[in-house]
Amino acid sequence: VSSTGVRPQESTFLLRRKMAMALKRIVVIGGTGAQGTPVVQALSKSDRYEVVVVTRSASSQIARSLSNLANVLLFEGQYTDEDTARKAFVGAYGVFVNTDGFTLGEKAEVFVGMRMFELAVEAGVKHYIWGSLDNALRYGGYDPKFRCGHYDGKARVTEWLLTQKGSKTTPSILTTGPYINMLQDGMFMPQVKNDGQLLEFTQPLGPSGKIPMIALEDVGFYALWLFDNFDRAAFFDLKVATAHVDFNDVVSAFNAVQVEKRSSKRAEWNPFDDVSSFLDGFGAPRDLPVTAIFQSDAAGMSFHENFTGWWNLWRANIVERDYQLLDEIHPQRIRSVREWMELTSYDGTLKQVLKDPWLGSPALQDKHLGGA
Image (cartoon, rainbow, N blue to C red; front, side):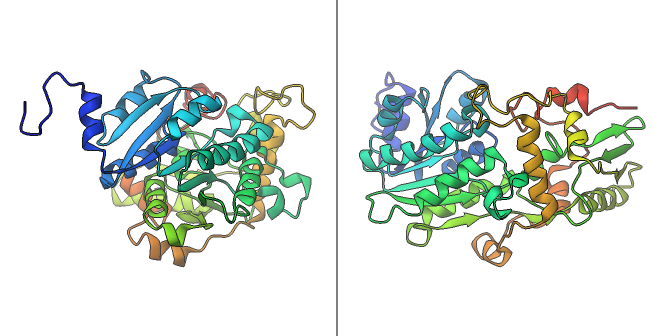
């Protein structure tokens, strides 16, 4: 028997479970995704929580890497299966849920977000945090040009959760937005020209558009803050961002960093005027459903319809953030695109952030890199 009282033949799982028994258990749904991964990392690093990551495949590379973190366990199963969710939630203090709207579709995501909360109440979970996005349609006064299914679905769940007064389970909301990291992968990627010396951004943001971009490097902190501050977080929608950014900001930041480094690389912004033409560059047919779930459903949206609403939202510059509040909550937060570029040594190179087959790498490998 070792000095810890644990017999050598006991499994690593049991050993880690014993060591974590005094910690509050947090179940994370979506923990292997772009946003969920830093949430799991922050909860683990705090040494205040045991983290259970629900994953379809415990043998995937990202799941295995998370399982190597302190106080992190894997629970294999599909969270949309209610028996899986029920079993995962047993004994949990908190649940963090970030569903994938591109996998589920707008209608299913609304149901799943609500149903996960109901199952959390059933299991006696105290704190339920919903990973949300802004209500594009409501921000746009319900003008259909702003409709964006993967935003609006999450936002409908937010509005319902905030009405659940008197429940045994208390909801909090973490509303994020487009990741600054999408400068490395996705809608914000530049085209690389002149043998790598020029980054050309063509995003159709318009003359007065701004995007409240958020650095994934800070998302975990905000989720941890919500779990650590139950009274303040109760029925609170924490809307986070790094800064409201346009592509003049991106280009200026990149060029300033390159001058400082004495590099000859430069960036330009030559925007498309037409959103549809920009979206065509991703190779998705204009009638391609944004999700495979509702291909024959009249309420379903195409890739182009969904992301036209998304770009219209940013072009209108109508989404707000309280940066004074964010400075109070996270004094060391990243506050500008330049600061993020310096932190990550950004050079325009493709780096996988997203899993979507039309937006993320490797799709962009051929479509947006290496252009003449």
